[in-house]
Length: 362
Image (cartoon, rainbow, N blue to C red; front, side, top):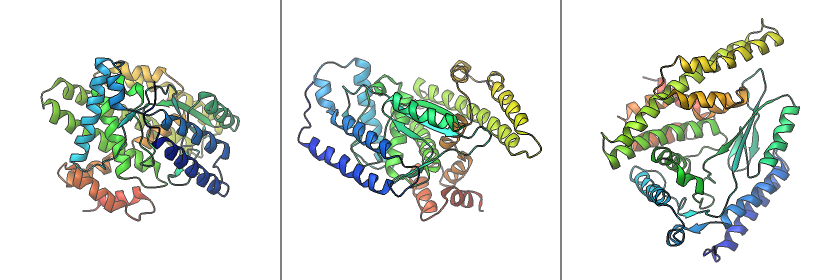
């Protein structure tokens, strides 16, 4: 398939190279920022951007299934809906990386008896508790190093990808196979990142985007399909199950954390109790009265379950109660809520401390 973006391609690659060189220069003075990692990431980022095709060209090629065409229509409609209530209008998801067949791997690590994720620091985004890779063999090398250092390691694939407005991020082909609920939530999540991103606070950014993306997806489904639609009912059931799942993991995290922090227990006792607690996850799910428990039992069986995995869950779901409190004060209006969050976190060294102060004050 020929590329019709040849005029913009040299400019895109130049921008990637300039950004990579700038990052490499700064990396030399920042501990934990691997030069080889940056070079490979820049190369594969350029490869991904080079593979972008205009959506209309893919449509006219007659290679899409009806489901894929429907998904493309939904992405465009979700973007328009997001703009209606104040999410930043971007050129993301206006192209598709149709011939790009790589997976994106997300890697995180954590000590076995402590919830203190390993972090890396990069220019622009600041400190992050995970790394992204475009080849599993590269992720495996880093994972082996971290395991050799005694860390728990968790690696998963990422369904979507964002450069936070630096480039026009394309749609990845697997996204076109998702159901409407997941697709709407993901697109809105990424638009939230483009609207508000606080450098150096990934946990806040991901938790905020998860919260707003989920709320906005409900509003989208109700607006487009109606308050009694099966799609909205499916989303609500999924949300209720997800809230119970979050509570299960939150309680497991608390139980483990109390063991880790207990100075009266020996290291061997902590390790033994840790294994017992992780082994209890399946029974916790079975006792939670989930509407669709099979989805979560499958997640339990798909290991490993360790501190790195549980810490990453916390990265995406931290202090939702504080966000709920602020949203309630704005009568559920997401636009004024997001404006309030931006004001609350402006110039704050720790956005969660600022959020707590705002959420718990009279």
